[in-house]
Length: 395
Image (cartoon, rainbow, N blue to C red):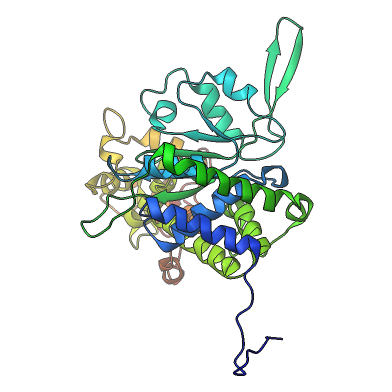
């Protein structure tokens, strides 16, 4: 029930300490950095806060700060993250052994600038760090190392939250487990306050201490939290710590958190690049048009005819029948001998019905509902089975 003031008007509800701290953290972020959207600013705010309660989480979401070019603010954002997160550990020039040995049951927050040193063409020798970043998203995924001195196998923890900044996309194995923020250069009308490490970092570290005191006062409640999530599966695993912090803070933050989840996951879906196999499935659907079966040669011809598709340059001679078969076999799609109308006659080919299950599961398209009106062939024959004609009748 709202309290009334002397004029009889309802008074605003007092803001909680947690919501006030998150507001201050967000204000600090947007003072020094132009974030691409309001939702991105909310997401980074909650990610930083979540680092202070890592012992409570089952998953350690990554924060990917990426940009198309230099001078987009990614390093400055990483500076502010470093100043406000829990126990920042910068991995520049750190050996793999040093990084692994720095992770404990209460891990630091790993920060990586210029992440191409781990994932890009200059990444030779960083296999251990890549493995840690891939495995450390979930608890109980330790690295195993043999210690010759003690003749024992050691289990080394990998679980820790990590922020990575770099130009271009990170590997799918990272971005699929991350809150992804796509930075961009400031426009002429956008201004930020200059960040000076000696002057500005100490008050930000004080804010970090206040966040830690607030969140660590009740880690058991955070650990037991099961906040309603607007997304599912791995996205829910990644965003759950952020939403749990928002719900714990109260105020406007629960709504802002869920709006950020929906906005950034939708952005990731729109910008994500499918794997080569999924791209092939989708391109095969386009190549089939309204045909119920295609000779392998015709399917390949149509695939390679798209100038924006990779199939004409897939290998020295482009996509071949053998490579096509290898890629599709993972989805239990195989060529069969089919009798087509003349002048093709009997030839190896693919039937549309053999693709429909994979299309539904891996690259659903609303147009599939319209394709249901087509009369498909029966399941295609396999080598050594009865040959089918274009009408699906045994020969």
